[in-house]
Image (cartoon, rainbow, N blue to C red; front, side, top):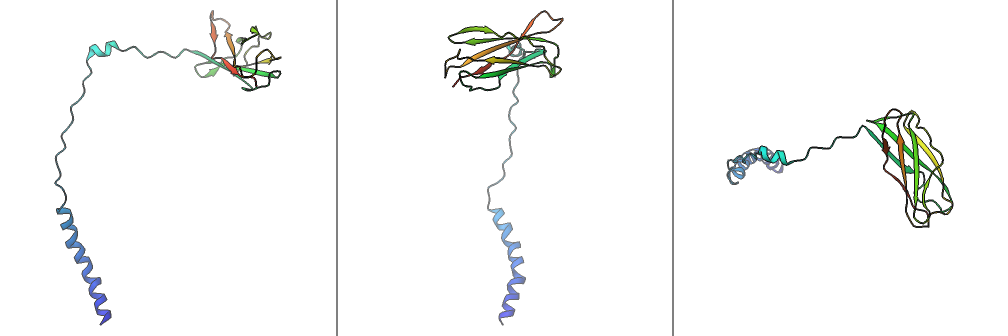
Length: 161
């Protein structure tokens, strides 16, 4: 008898589901028609007010310090890279000026030429010229043979500890 009851549920359960599923979906909210949104129109007069996108300069460069938190008497390196589009520019002469807070501006003696990757390196002995916990900035610029303008880099920064 127990076996028959079990078979009875196994056989009738799928029919019960077939009956119950349509009832639950029939009780849900009615689907509504989605109304399209209005299209935004930008007038020509508005477009004339916009400023054009700036162009990317062909030559770009940046500088950075080998140590951003050196001791006040340490010697650090200042690196810089010059690129045209994304390629390094070799043969350009670099110049670096350190802007010390209390000691003033100091032009570094070496004027290295960039290698084929566009990199240069300056050696900077701090010699206690910058007080501890006071940021200093190093400006680097490149002169490219045949071009009559200097390319100024984003500066390097360091703060002696």
